[in-house]
Length: 73
Picture 1 (tube, rainbow, N blue to C red):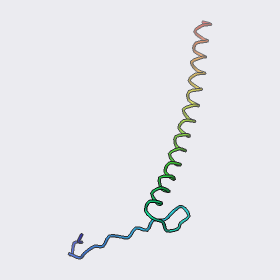
Picture 2: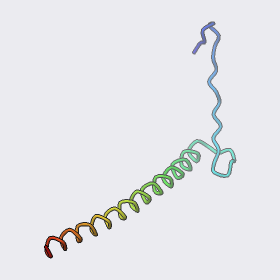
Picture 3: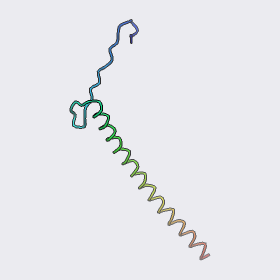
Picture 4: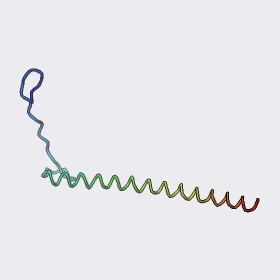
């Protein structure tokens, strides 16, 4: 690959590190990155599930209130 002036551009060397900051091979770095991402996505899923559970409880309470008012009125 060349730049605008025709000089050869060397690719930047990527150094992989594990979770402790040590140098590692590419396989270990990918595994630990996937593990970290999985943890983040699990927390996002659990947070969304918790919010939905709260909303479901509120909807159930409102539905019970509406049905109770319909039956009494």
